[in-house]
Image 1 (cartoon, rainbow, N blue to C red):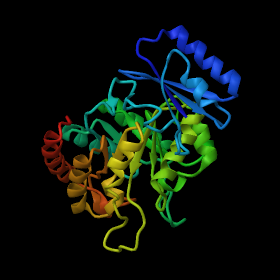
Image 2: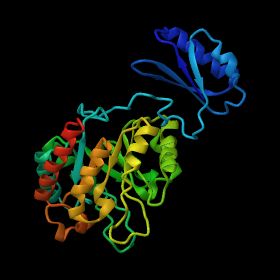
Image 3: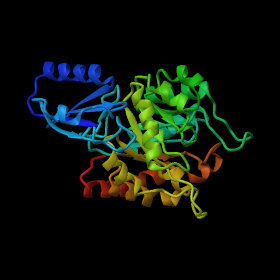
Length: 338
């Protein structure tokens, strides 16, 4: 249930009404203050809430029942878009297009620094890089671990780019204290213990959609993080598993406008994992921007042929530069800045 309050209600009136609802009905109340209204989201068992009694309150404008099981990530609870601000002042979800780029995995200092400098020159504002890599085969390269995180931080020092890297377990979280954005990979989208622990962090989380997960399941996973206290969540569509064999996965481009309608959270697209094919990254990126994506996360390697992880889908720095030029045309057409 959500309660829309009338305009120009004083802060002490909102607080008193929230406390009244919490005590009377034994529920949680989430307060969202937008440009034009204040919305109270009632969380918990609202079956006993007397809708007529609530409507009769002087400060109440409207009461709505919400059918979706996700509350905090629901746009009905939070009409305005969530804008996430990183420590360097970079804003995500404010209407601009955020470009994230870098290697699938960190391999050595020269590689990650060279790629970081190249993608920054082309327009990327965040550096991606895997230190811990979940791989289908136990014999594949699993990442450099702690050493990889250290090299990412060195690249950040040299370029000024914030960094994003993937966490795989609760036990690794202590190593991510100085990582700007923590990524949850597709395989961990429903690792609920990890999600709850991420909810206790005070840094943004990028949550990737699972390989066979529905949009609602993605939003429910975001709910796990948000219900534990962390509302800085970025949703990422990275392709789902279908019967199609011409691509690594199938990019669900329709997920972008659907997520933007259902949720207030920023929505990114990963065209690299969605396709697994370098030449497809450019058209899929353009489609994502046209569909309303807030950002893109793209794999770039200075020597894809010798990459230890996902080289076959990685762009070279020159290819990334060309792709960004094409993306800019679409971004300009839909009113987004890069």
